[in-house]
Length: 295
Image 1 (cartoon, rainbow, N blue to C red):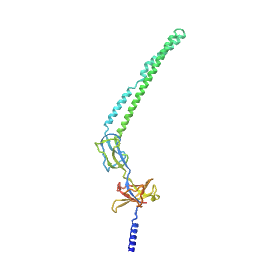
Image 2: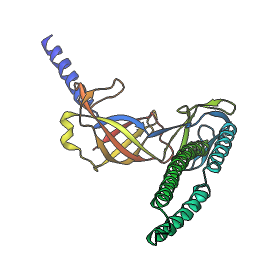
Image 3: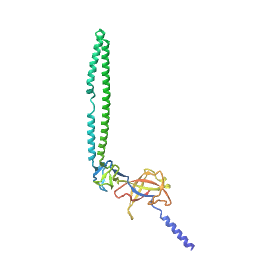
Image 4: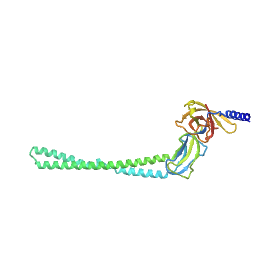
């Protein structure tokens, strides 16, 4: 009986030793995904993309109706031109007073010459000087008023111009373009629907350059480093597997609990460190696909 138990125990031990995984870590293939959203409001006129399409950086993804924005811009342009045309012509409005002042100064000079010869009275000289002072005061007040009016009108025109430029920017943003070259993963909006700022239109990812988010135990950290070349094994089910060269581009600074779908080399490890491994996709790798890593 004891002999039987001994062989049974040895058999289990050998079996366990034979089940040592031939990988150092496992993970899931991911890609950096960009969600492209509307930046203005309006009816979506076109969205000529489909899921799976390849789009180039700068390529038009959707066009949003700008009719209301264009009308607002024209109205603001009209208001600005009207405001600018109402700006006072300071030189023209002050011309009459300047002429009177010039004439009165000549009169004061003439009277000052006459009083030196005793040909006029001091009262006439003082009255003439007082009249000149009054005219100069009137000119100063007029220039101040006209200057304030022009400044107010100029500020109003500048504010209108600022609003017009904001609308011009919104009109430009009504043509939504792709921020990167990649593949359309999900399309969220169709022509005829109404777009609002922040509403997602589609998501795009560069599937040519993806990465495996793998998980290593604390005891393995000493064996990995940034820039390290590793072997990534993609599992296509059954016995179909392909090896890809990979490069470690990121190592988490903090541990996390082992995700349920992830297997580690040490099955007893509860905490793991996420690691990103860049992989060049030959077209076979798919997002969400399972992969293994060998150091």
